Image (cartoon, rainbow, N blue to C red; front, side):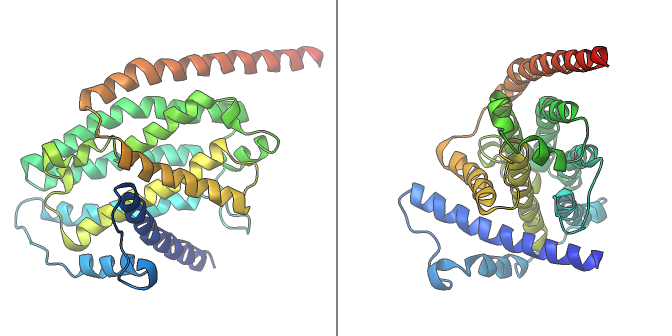
Length: 312
């Protein structure tokens, strides 16, 4: 029953990713005053499946060099890890309840940069290698403040289980208490998922598509699916952390769609950020804000515990 439930979950995730790409193409076309996909099926609804068949049937150039096993294996591993994220998603019907889901999420996020780095290194191309190196320095910059945001919430709630976000936000959202942290979280998610304006590892203008320049056909599609799956998962996590007072209601899923829409909206409006400015932004602005808020709430929680202990 467990494996059957996982199979159904992953199947609907892949269908959601397919229609998320259609949503992105439609929104970008409306922003740029042009027609989006409309020929394949009614209103272009079958366009994602047509794109999938086209990508999977493309010719792949097989390279024969020292790292070809790693070269072919990395996209599949990255795709599998993007599906493992969804095992942490809260399902009431006796599915999975991670008591240490936050630590598990940290482990998976820490692994994500290795796939980009090793894919770029094993391609035996200077452009791919530069894309992998940029992703490493980028992740070092934003992950410190990104993890501090999670650690602050876990410290306040007293646990690593994601279900605690629901119980702590029944009456009021965390957004009203941690308004600056929402923007730090969202911009870090943009960098984590290699989305505009922080898509430095895939910068076409200076890297010729970066770490995935040597990949094509199904191998390129797996990178594509992994990034969009991570965006969808982070939209759910963002709603769970900052807007979760009505879990599994229709309004909750509308908030998830809105956060997913923000990824596309930002891509259509902002140019690519400069590489060194992202590092300055994270080290000189995001990190001091997160540390100050962390120590403020640390003192507050210690004071509350001290008052309760003195009363007893």
